[in-house]
Amino acid sequence: MDKKKQLLLALLLGVIAVFGNQTYLESRISELAPKKYVKIARARTRIKAGTRIASSMLDQAEVPENFLPLTAIKWESRENFVGQELLVDVLKGDYVLESYFTSGTVVGRTLSQQLDSDNYRAINLPVDETNSLARSVVVGDRIDIVLTFLMPIISQKVSVVLLQNVPVLSTGRYSQVDQELGLPGERGGRYNSLTLKLLPADAVRLNYARQIGSISILLRGPTDNEILNLSPVGTVGDLLSPADQEKLAELVAKLKDTALAVSDNEKLSEQLSTLLEMQRKQNQAKLPK
Image (cartoon, rainbow, N blue to C red; front, side):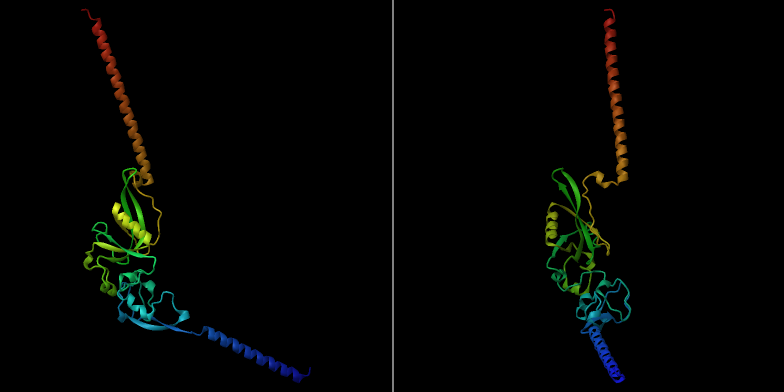
C-alpha cells in the first residue's frame, strides 16, 4: 500500500473516531441532562430548631427530578407542614425536608387525611388526669397501652402491654382549623380523650379491652420505635428484680425455720405439761387416804 492510501485510511479512521466519540458524549450528556424539574420548598431565611414553620419562611426551588432529595417537600404540599415544629436548624437556601419535623405524620385538613393508608382506622380513647400523664400527651406523640384486668381462672389481676408505638392523631375535640395551624390539640390541655391510629384488628382489641379492664398509657420518646417483648405481670414476684426475688426467698426460708422452731417449742412445752400432769396425778394416788 502506497503512502497516499495509508494517509487516506488514517484520515478516515480519525474521522470515524472523532464522530464516534462525539456521538457517545452527546448520548451521555442527554442521559445526565435533567428531563424534568420539580418545585420544592427551601428556607427563605435561616430557621432555628423549635420554630413553627410559617408560609412566609419558605421559598421555592426548582430541582432536577433525578436529583430530588428523598424527603423533599413539594411546593404544592408545603401548606401541610405550616405550623409544625422543626427539629433542626435550616440555613438560608437549604431545602426543608419532611424528616426535619417533630412528627412524621403530615398534618391534614380532616381527620381521615391523617390515615395515610387504607389499612388504618382512627379510634377514640377516653382518658382522665391520671392515665393521660396529667394531660401532657400531645398530637404526634407515640404511646404504649397497658391493660389491667381480672384473670377469671386465677381470680387475680394481671397487667399486660396491649399495644405499642401507637400514634396520637388528636387530643380532645378534633378541629380542622387547629390542624391547619399546626396547634397541638384542644386548647389549654383540657381534653378527655385521645384519637389514635391503629390497624383494624388492634382497634377492635382496644375497644374490647376498655370493656373488661382499666387502661394506662406509657409515653415514648420521639425517636423510640422499638417493639419490646414484655411478659405479663400477675404476681408479687413479677414486680421484683432477680436480686430482690433471691433476697425474698432467703427471707421466706428464715421465716419458715423460725416458724418450725416455734412450733417445735410449743410441742415440747405441751409434752412437758402432759408429763407434769401425769406425775402430779401419780403422786396424788400414792398419798395415804
